Length: 487
Image 1 (cartoon, rainbow, N blue to C red):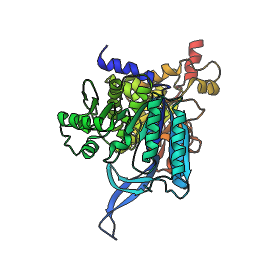
Image 2: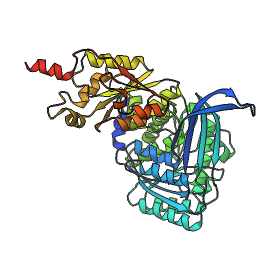
Image 3: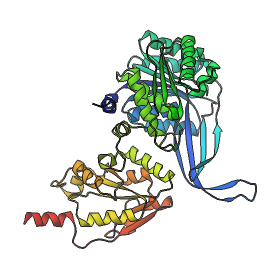
Image 4: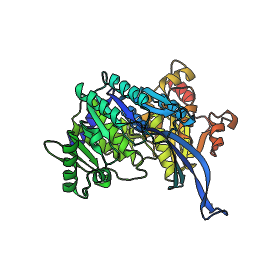
């Protein structure tokens, strides 16, 4: 097999890998709109807000990525007793498989980073936070929870954003406990004094952080190696993985061969959270039994995925396989997406200024009526997502003899159509949850419906979208086709 095929074969091993993550969690808000005029009050643009998105940032984004890769994260962090803290708890609770241990600290302000975006351009970032260290009792509780999790988890990911959760004493307690239990500790460091991470297994600074921590230039391979070796000697760690942006990554071991891994990103829309993805993939890979080099190679692939997405994004296992196979998203099986992937892709298309459309159905025995509906739907938008009823859903709606074709077969046929950009299977009787997740700009349904009967119509119109009723082709239906076959 090729090197990429070898890596792709490792991705399924990530499923079920247990990682405990500890660090600073924050709420990332993205406020999107258009800026078409200058304020009469000051020489600044006026942002007409169209929509807002909230997601987990900091260590929370590490957890999202671990789960997205198929890992099982335990999450230890601290939030304030405020609305943002409650929203973080709700978002963490919504991640499938995560085991949350979120501590509340009275008087603490939960960190919020709000980014205001007009079109493709970020206009302003506003931060609300308390960077003061958590109190001693909270720090002891957090360290105790991590040490307990190490009984089941083979890797601890320490995500330091310098917001006060990772006080030095607690960090050392966690690292020493990991060493004693023969566990791997991976640190995403902050600040200039890395001695607080002494004894960690792997440190993952970016190039600027490495230069700041060592006072050494880090402009080329040789300089990065020398600076990393200094950190290894000072911190007594086993590896330093340096993220270098467009120049990729460098994995420098205490002993052995240095590896410089090229960047794979073909398009860059947003680098927010790319470092979190690297830490998450590295940790999940090692927890799954991969070598540090194999895990670092997968981390490089994952980084190429998230910088092409919007906001603090997630790299899913399927994304890694897609990149490693060099497949275009617009072809064949890679048009098939989970709800989370469809949500990410729709957001990415909108960030490019593209109008996202949605239609849905069972599409059992594809006929000219289906093709016409899909063609009309695609004509009303720039990118079309098709929601496909799962087999279980079709049986409930159409009876025990249906579907004639399995959901896999129906999805493959839809994905082969040039007018279809993405196919998402849903098991519910209606696609309302899928519609709410992808927030289409255009919702298309056949003219045998009236707008008030179209599932999701009110929701789509509530965020400024529109509903289109497509004309039908007389006499075309799967039921009629099956009647003809049975004669």
